[in-house]
Length: 418
Image (cartoon, rainbow, N blue to C red; front, side, top):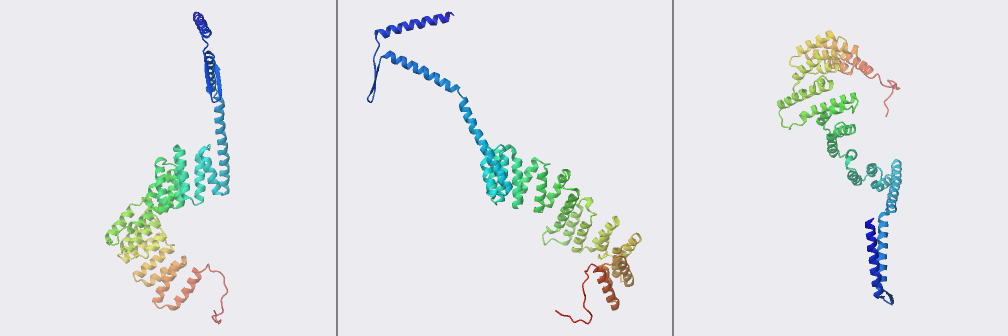
C-alpha cells in the first residue's frame, strides 16, 4: 500500500514537472521528406513515439503468444502430406497387384518418405523394380529402406537375399544370409533360403553343417531331410577322389576313399546307394577283391537282394570260397531269384557249367529277368545248345516284353515293304 502511494506521488511530481517544462518551452520539430513536411512540438513527438513504442510492444507480445494459428497451419500441411502419401500408397499397391510394375514403383517410391509404414513401400517398390529387370533401381530402393528404417534391417536384408537368389547371385546371397543367420539362427525363412542357395552352389559340406538347424527348426519334412542328408554325403563321398590331382597314385586314392567312407555317419554306412558307390569306386581302383570282402560283410549285416546281385559280379581272391559263402546264404533265402542268379554266375566262375544252368533256370522260374535269360543263353551258346538258345530267346522276349501293346503282325510269307 505504501509502495503504491509512493509510486503515485512520484508520477504526480513527474507529471507536474513535465507540464511546467511544456508550458515554459514547447519546442519545435520539423520533419521534411520530398515535398511533404510535418511540423509539431517536441513534446507531442515524444508522446507519440512513446505511445507507438508501447503499442508495438503489446502487438509483438500478442503475436508471440498467438501460436495456435501457426501450429494449426503446420498440422494442416502435415495432414495433407499424409493423406497424399496414403492415396499414393493405395494406388501403388493396387498397381502392384495388377502387375503394373512401373506405376507401382513410382507411386510407392514417391509416397515412401511420408508413408505410415515406409518400409513396406520401399520393399514393395523394390520388388516392382526387380520385376521390370531394374536391378540397380531395386538395390537403390532397398538402400533407402535401410537408411529410413535402421532398426528393421532384417526385413531389408532378407528381401535383398531373395532378389540375389532370383538373379542367380548365389555367392552374394550366401554372404547376406550368413550374416542374417548369425543374428537370427532360428529364422525359418533365412534357413530355408540358405538351404536352397547352398544346393544351387553345390556346397554339400556347408549343407551338412546346416542340417541340424534345418532339423531342429523343422524347416523341411523328415523324409526330405533324410533325402538331403543322403545326397550331401553321397556328393561329398563321390568328390573325395575327384578332388585329388591326376598324378595321385592308386594306393593314396584307396586310402582317401577309405577315409571318406569312415567319415560317413554310422546310420548311412548301410545305405544301399552309398554301399554301391563305395564298391564301384573300389572296383574302378582295381580293388575288386577288397570290394568282395566289404560287400560280403554288408550282406551279413543286413540282407539286400540288390547287393547280392552285385556280389555275383565281383571276382574275389578265392572263387570257390565265394561260391560256398553264397550257398550258405541260400539256406536262409531259398526263394531269392537274385541269389540264384548270383549262384549261377559264381558257378560259372568255378566252371561248374551244369550247376550254373540249374541256378539260372531256377532264377527264371521264380522271377523271369533279362540278366538270368542273357546268362543262360550265353552259357548254352558256348556249350553248342543252339536250339535251346533259340527257345530261351523266345521265352525271354515274351517274359521281359510282356508290357508291349497288342499290334498286328505280318504273315510269314508276306514280303518286307518300306
